[in-house]
Image (cartoon, rainbow, N blue to C red; front, side, top):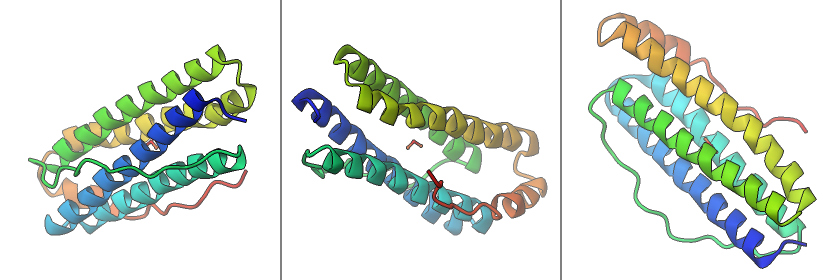
Length: 167
Ligand code: FEO
C-alpha cells in the first residue's frame, strides 16, 4: 500500500520517464535527418529503455493498489547544434533523472516504505549505468569531432539493441 504522497511522487516520475522517452524519440528523428542511422538506432534503443522504466513504475503503482495517472508532457526539443550537443543534452537530462530518483529513495526512507526502497534500488543502479553510457559517448564525440571518424562511431552505435532485463 502506497501513501498518497508516495503514489503521487511515483506518478510524477513515471510521467518524467515518458518525457525522457519523448526527448530521445525526437533525437531519433534528428539523427535520421543528419544521415546518422547508427546514432538514430542508439537513441531508438534509449527510447525503448525509457518506456520500459515508465512501465516498470506504472506496473508498480498498479500492483500496490494505486492509480497510475498519465499527465500532459512538455514538447521535447527538435533540433540540436551537433551530435555532441544532443548527447550533452542527454547527459544533463540523465543527471536530472538521477537527482529525482535519489529524491524518491529519500522519500521512501522517510516514509519507512521498505517495498518502495527495494523498488527504487534498481533505478539507483540503473542511473549509474545510464550516466556512464551517455558520458562515454560524449567523450568519444569530443575526440572524433565532425570528421570521418564520426561515421565509424555511427557504425558502432548502430549495433545497440534494447532487450528488457530479466528479473
Ligand atoms: Fe529512465 Fe534514462 O532514465
